[in-house]
Length: 588
Image 1 (cartoon, rainbow, N blue to C red):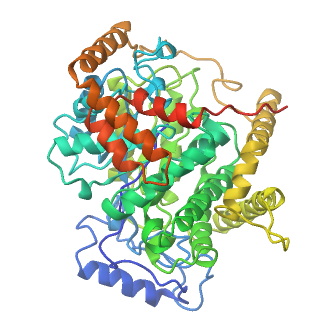
Image 2: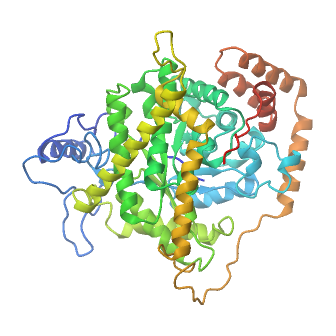
């Protein structure tokens, strides 16, 4: 599903960054907070309780030592958050995930979201687009516009963002297999708006590891995908520094049935793999690592989720510093988007989903998320209606405006239960990292002297071998099976499913995508193909293939193909002819 955060959630260059050595008391935090206030980086807002009582920006020991693994907000290892100001400096970004039908229909939904207080856009694509296919292909029949918006060429991108200035609005795109050509179409659409593309701010998911682990939307074998991702990292680092080319996604891993610890560990391991990819390209970790963001699931076990988010920041900071040599704060910061758990929604008594989503959203906020999507109550049945999408948006706004949770940074920091859970999930994740590395060591080639040789890096080797041997999918399947058994035995309970099943609920009116959407999209695509210069399109596609046969960066030739109105299916098609298509190995 959804992804993404703003390209920079700092409050100014160096304004709020903490030292990479933990302080021993409140004074270092207080200095950073006072500096932020002096620079106007704390909002002019009412930071009192509903009864009018003043609250402090943070709570912790008044003097003496603080556990360095917990620390203070804005200091390494960032367990309590990236900024000393917490949400007093800037609340999380409300980023609602949306896409359905054709580009015009989705554009209308985007303008509704922005007009009612949404802070950013997140694009959901339909299945043909996610698989790099055009709407008029045989395998697209019956799927066009049904689980997201259909995008066939730059012309669709222009309609999708009509009257939405791409230079001002941060946009995320949830797509991995054909992410790079879709990115190129987005860039060309921005060019046609007159935007300086070097200033574009947003996020592309691009996370191909999680596709092999959980979601299954790939085009090629892992190696060609990693080549494209490396090319994208190089391109954005040099030419689009505000843009995040990767959102490492744990959401889909959790939705496939993983535990909280597995979601955390597999996601961070994927992130370490992309760090190794950047290093193998000769990129400076302090330059490219801030372009990595993360995307997590907020499930319904409230405290476990809060602990997961806090452990994630701490692990990432430590590994970036100790394993990969990062020295800048931003390279150690884990910035992440959260989406409430789609798998927790029930078709039975669907109004209860509003409560589930609110609880999950609250866990994400108390865990320090940088941006958030709240699911709609009817998403287990269909795409959200306008009414249910508004309720999901208002859920975040109630949390932000009415509950006081933006007043204090990491209000649960120091809780014996939360800190114990944080430590436990961190320890479980570290065990899994060791297992993944062992996979890489066992399968990697060796030099004449017996030394292990990794083409990219040790974590990447483990990831690739784990994918090849279905190690990840097997572990997730086992976890999912254990949970299902617990449900069927009644050990785990879901209201409306195996507990409290009596109801007065009435069937919901759901959003239905008409057949006319597909018919009109195919007709529009046919007209578009007839109106372009076919010879130029073929020339640009041939140039892309020629570049792909060398070590050249493929972003520029792909941009040229997009500018000529080459379609997504054509661009992906010529690369499939060159690289072949991936088939998952059978596992029992």
